[in-house]
Every structure is written in structure tokens, then in C-alpha cells.
Amino acid sequence: MGYLPTLPETLSRTTRKYPDREAIVYPRKDVRLTYTELDERATRFANALRERGVEPGDRVSLLLHNSAEFAIALFGLLRVGAVFNPVNYRLAPSEVGYILDDSGSTVLIFEEATRDTVERGHDEFGTIEEYVYVDDDVERTPEYAAGFHDLLEGASAAPPAVDVVSTDQYAIMYTSGTTGRPKGVVHSHRDATYHNMLYAGRMGLDFTDIGVSAMPLYHNAELNCGLLTRVNLGATSVILHDFDPRRALEVVDEERATHLFVASRIWGQLLEESTTMSSFDGSSLELGVYGAAPMPPSLLEECIERFTEDYATAYGMTEMGPCATFILPFEVREHLESVGRAAPNHEVRIVKPTENENPNDPVTPEDTVDTGETGEIILQGPPMMQEYWNRPEKTADAIRDGWFFTGDAGYLNEDGYLFLVDRIDDMIISGGENIYPTEVENVLYEHDGVAEVAVVGEEDEEWGERVVAHVVPDGDLTVDDLDEFCREHDGLAAFKRPRRYEFRDDLPKNPSGKIQKYKLRDEAEA
Image (tube, rainbow, N blue to C red; front, side, top):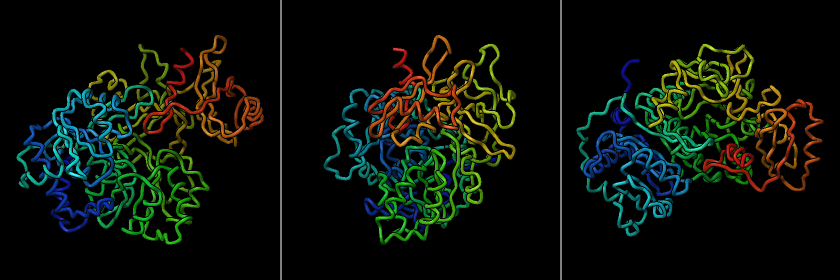
């Protein structure tokens, strides 16, 4: 691959091309920054970090909601050669502490909204040498922290003499940890720059676009498909501190936004909220992007009627940058259940599942299954991660001969469209049959009395494993109701029916809202 610029270089180049274009709009503080202003403030923050001892390769963590300061801090720390570590602000202090310690972060940037987490965990954040507080009110800056805006005002605007190259690490991003402790995914500047160009090209974006960053910037999807892509193009990012459906729709109109990415279920919230807003226009919106799950056909049609005709989606994960496949607007209706075809310069294969592989005969990228057969999805593409931070064994297990083994189950059809089925490690083997919990969950969700459900395997002496459904009921519901419903359902084979139901008040979830099935399995084994 030829030379690709670092992320700070993309900002510098964009600034030279579009010095007076708006880079950042932050309505919460009525902040509007041109590219010249963003570039200068990022440089000042870089110099402030250098003055406080930050060296190339040091990890700097951000415990921030979306903000203009997030963007300034990100490009500033990268300009000084530091490595960006975004931390989910929904985590508990001990979970934040684990990430700070594992990454070896020396600087933590936080704000009023995350101050309680920092002060509850402060004594345990052993690697942190410097705290920086994003000060809405400078008088509230803690004694142990420097004020963000004070640092900007006191620092030089001259570019720091630091040599950063595209193969250097740009970020360590921690996975959401549905199977235990999160792992740090390491990406280089080149990974991010390539992905940003890929996403812009696939989605048809350019410098005239105005995108709303409504989803958290600590997440790779909003960061790399939103903010960083727009900086690469010279487009404008409208940043919302927190997601609120009404406010998101208001800024679409106020700023004449053209691009909006939210999770599939969030489009439903936007649709519902829009019916209460008589003044909502939405005519500026040119592209809606959804992720996390397929879009129900009825919801898509309603969104097309209310917002815009063009929608797209992608599949991937933090390890892939994140996008590896795309469904583009012209094919959305025809392939709603698919997550798309491989992106340019990417490849998708389906191989034998690795969950129960023989250690002496491991699955390789050549162990492909037939078209239409379910197996493990493996991916290959330029933005793939370098490694899992400090996890050489996990890295070797995930990256084999240049392919990333996703742990997702799926299949390809004859036209190369990819369909997701489930997580490989959630697969249940009962009586020699492979059962994917999602199949069972989808049937149970059709019952009006089911609010939430998670299906797992439980040890069984006769069958190896049996299917168990953990159900959060919506109103009156009995085991007999569900058992009869599954028996009569044409879409569920008899061997896939749950053999036990457990009613619960809630399901264990991580801070991102993903159900932690390993905890349900652990309960059964206890």
C-alpha cells in the first residue's frame, strides 16, 4: 500500500484547502469552529500535553461525552504522537480503572458529566499522572486537575516538532466485553485514514456534507464513519453531547444536515418523535445510515416516507475499522436481511466454526464451507487491526494467515451477500445438532408477552446441551403459553424448542446495552 497521511495530516491538509469552512458545530455551547480554528486549538493542546511530559507513544484516555473539546483533544494528542484511548463513559469506576491500567494511560481527560466516576475511582487509577478537566465552569476544576481551556490559552500555536508516521499506533479501543474483560484493539493512523476514504467513497460523501454525530464518539462507528471521515473530506460535524431524538431532529433542520447515522432501533425513536413535531422538515437529509441490526421492512418504508429515500448499512467491528461490508441505497429494499457484500479491497469467507476446533488441527482460512452453509465469518481488508493490546495469544487466535476470525456465524448466498446468524460461541450443540440462539429468540420475540429474551445452552446429560430461554415478560405470561407458541410455530424445528424457561426481571448487560450471555451460562453452572 502506498503512503497514506496520518490523522493530524488529514486535518492540516483539509485546513489548507478549506480554511474557512465549518469543521465543528457544537450547539450545546453555541460553538462553531472553522477548520483553521480547529487546527489551531488542536496544535495548542498538543503543545500543552508536551509541556506536561507527554511523549510519542504515551496513551491518553478520554472519558468524555461528545463535544467540541473531544475533537480538539483527539487531534491534539495525535499531533504530539500520543495514542488515543476512548473510554465508555457508561462504565463503572472499577471498569474504567481496568482499561486505564491495561492500556497504561498516563493522562485522563474528563468533564463534569463524568467527574463522579473519576472521583470515585481516582485512588485506583494508578497509571494516571495528569488529569485534565473540561471546564464548563473554571471554578469547579478539581485541585488535582488542569483546566482544559486554561491549557489551550497558555500553549503555543506553533506546530510541535514531533515526527508521526502513518504506521504509528493511533488508538487503542476497548471492545464492549460481552464475553468477559474487554480487549484493547490497536489501530494505526493508516488503518483509520484508509477506512475513512473507504466509507466516504461507499456512501458518496464529499466536502459539502453536514453530518450529525448523535451516537457516542468513544465508539469506533461514530468516530470513524462520522467525525474522522468528515475531517478527511472537509465536511461539517454537528456534535450532540448526548443523544436525544427530539434534539437530533431539531439540529437536522437547524443545520440543514445531509447525513445521519444511528442504530436501527434509534430510527424508530426518531420516527415516533417526528410525529410530535409539527414544524419538522427534514428535507435536507440525503442519506440515513443504520447499524447494529437489520432494519425491519415496515420501519424502513416509514423512514423513507418521513425522512429521506436513501438508506445504507454496513457490517464490521472495531477490529476491522469498523466497516467490512456494505449495503448501498440502491440495494437496501431488495436485500434488507443481508449486511451486504465485501467492501472494495476486502474479502469475506465462511469457514468451519472454530468454537470446538481441534487444537492440533486448527481451522484455517482455507477451510471454507459451501455457499449457503452457516459457518464462521472471516474477513480480510486493509483497515484490519494490528493486534489486541498485550494479548499475543488472543491476537494469534483471531488473526490467522492475514484473516480476522470474527466469532460471528453467518453464510453467503450465490451473489456474495452476507447474512448474519449469531455468535459462534453462543451456538448450542444438542444431540449433535447445531442450534443458533438467535433463531429461537426471533420466534419468541413474535409473542406479544415477551419483552426481552436471551437463549443459551445448559449442560444436559442425555443431549449434551439443552436450550434454555431467559425471558423478561411483558404482562401475564406462563411457561405453557410459550411452550405452546413454539410447538405451533412453523418456523422452529422441534429440536430447537426451549426445554426450560426462566422468567426474570431483567437480563445482564454490559454498559453498551449488549446482553452478556456468559453470565447466564455461569448462573446455570453455579
